[in-house]
Length: 394
Length: 239
Ligand SMILES: Nc1ncnc2c1ncn2[C@@H]1O[C@H](COP(=O)(O)OP(=O)(O)OP(=O)(O)O)[C@@H](O)[C@H]1O
Ligand SMILES: [Mg+2]
Image (tube, rainbow over all chains, first blue to last red; front, side, top):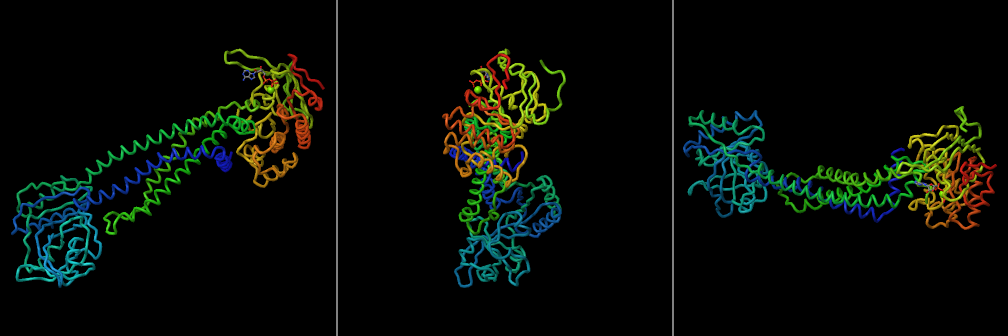
């Protein structure tokens, strides 16, 4: 029998008991929706949570070393950073040197306010997920005046909406310098913070800045802590620091993924349980339907349907119902994801743009089809075993 | 009793040939009931045969053997020149579809399908027919039983006699060589039964097929070319 005829027979079969099919579909929908929700939430919520942690603590596998250097040894810190960067650029790793100090900034016609200034050398954007909302991350020599980036808090405090903007930095009580704001970024910090490169800050100050408690940050998803520790220790030796230097893992991505895996497993089990209940219901109804329709089925056998045709009819109509359920579930996911989620997240979202979670769509379709199939197999077998000679016994 | 020379094919015009046919029912406890023994039967195309006998004599069971729904317990059976004594179920289904038409006592139409779809049902199985072919054949058969305008109706909305005429149209839509009917008028009053029987005979002759009807109705049996009486132990064929 051709596929076209099998489909046609299955489609016409849906008319046999529309209400029953609807109820079957609803009972399936509960389980399928649970699976789709678990799968979609997994992708959307988890990626949002992890993105936030990457913003605050660092991307997956970020290590930190506090360098045992005094304020006067800023040259050593920079040198160490340079050596480390040179060693890891070929490997899949990023490094940055950071130190912070309180500073006083004011808008051209505004009041002076205190900020936290983070001095940055290296690739901080690869260490944290701190996307630039407007402008570009300060590059050395990109502007005539030294450039800084502000976080949202700092930009709000200074009333800056657009970049580039000009600020005064009160370096000492009797001296100030002009700096250009080249970017506003979201860093998830509540403290008003400015970011500047070490060279830019030195230029603004007109002297090498002290690096108070400089920290070296290293991020790599592939290179092990031991290797990175060795690199840092070697760099320390180059500047005459006694080794070994220990790295601390600072990001929380791994722990979060662990927690999420547990929650996901629990939700998944609930979804499967709902599907199993649905399968039992479908089996129950399916077997009853075959008994009820045995007259029709044996008449079909008498006029030429083979056992496999009758089985295909039962399975085909079940799969059609499954496909309808899957379509409803998938349409709902797409509507929610593309219609509702963007409205709930702010424009300055740190997560990647929301896209249709195709794995959730795939899981939904698979769950629906498997449920339909599991519920239809036994009825199909019992339908195909009906004795054809019964056709003559009304 | 059995002919020693196995025939490879039946003669021209012979739709069904049974030689020394035995029909018995195997019970679960291992015993079996012999219903028909040593039946020799030749059915010519265009002929009509009544199968009669008291209740429980095995008429329906014989019909299920002739209708390839159950294998004979003994003897040989040929339909359209083909040995159909032992067949795989799927082959039997294919032959039922291609060579045979069935009219059942009652309740044999599919409730959720339209009259048109019911008549087209045999075309959903077996050899493929194109949509225009399906339309053409179904309409021809519905016209033959006087139900041309009924295609879109549901069986439930038809009278018993009309439903049976739809069943006749369905039995003939594939162009069968042999039509088998078990008490086709059993659920109808006499006048309706007579009219349905007239339709069945005329349509079968028109289609060039042979007809075998199981019936309790003596008058009906008399109106057919001959009868097979299962009441006696040895099946008697009266011409
Ligand atoms: N599947 C079966 N299992 C056991 N006995 C059966 C089975 N099918 C038929 N029989 C028996 O075989 C005998 C013949 O049955 P069958 O239905 O062929 O009779 P019939 O001649 O058609 O009777 P009626 O005129 O009442 O329809 C009956 O005694 C019946 O009980
Ligand atoms: Mg009977």
